[in-house]
Image 1 (tube, one colour):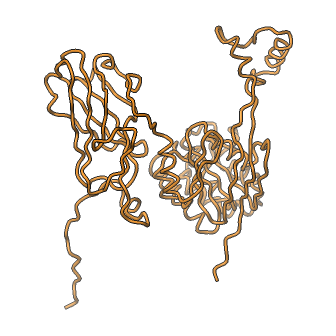
Image 2 (image 1 turned 60 degrees about the horizontal axis):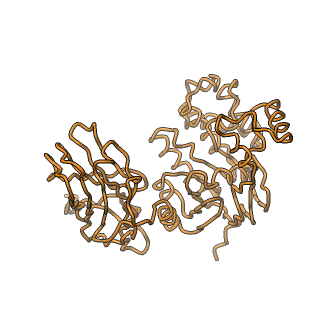
Length: 425
């Protein structure tokens, strides 16, 4: 019988409250002046012109986290996703013991290594080598333990030439390289990594993701926050979705990404001029966008073998020369390709118009996609561009999700090549 993994993190009814506008003048003198002005009923002396009344409105409570509950098992890689300001960083800071919760309780078993911001725990006047020992001490390691890992850390960070240079002279990318190498190699039982890896180059990001997989395979636990859904799906088995300080989903990582993407795209059906930007916004009105004859707000579910069309209906207030319309398809915020309506080159006649764009057949794999609509005049000086006003989902025909994750985003025809086995003569 396989023993069950033990729980290393348990969060019960966790909440964190902040007071807005109470403190934070920058100096003790500014805070005292603000406090005296408030007692005497005077305007905030630090408020900018036109904001005098807003200061009092900000003197209220704000719940960055509210009633969060979850458990993490030993050796698990947990992805935490959500929009900016959802409460992800606050959660990690509480787990890292940087700040304390207002309500609730956290039980953690094991040594914690955190990488929350560029240069977290580094002293700018110390060299890279000295900061490695400093971080090791903070993590509760003995000098002999750091000595054993020192060369491996330096080699992983590719910092051999600069390890004896003060950290204040490092670029943000160099600082992240060394900080991650320290956090991952000094053997914490729990590794917490925020979005900071985005500072590094693509090669180093791939290296870090591989290292986190190795850490997990050794029975240690990883908590990973990122806005890169590809990295989340590739690395994590389970995902948490945080919205407005509350945990709204806890489950399989693919379903977590789906929940996040559903929350990130508006469900409205009415398109307005506010959805667009550019100099042509007042001259071209996009009135309707339909995907496979379904309004953009409905997010149609599409069979991967089905042809996908995007229909754009609108009105041009004037005849425009050298004009082209286009749609762009995105996945997880990454632009995949743009399709142009070649019939429009020359003149866009005044009045109503209709353009239909057909996506390449059987190219996109299962997943959620968003669509943006736009247009430009030849030369690119006048343009029109929307936000994510359309969306669709290509269903996964495979129950295990293998097809959606294992082979990338695009489908390409199989070559039909046969595997030939050469027999020894």
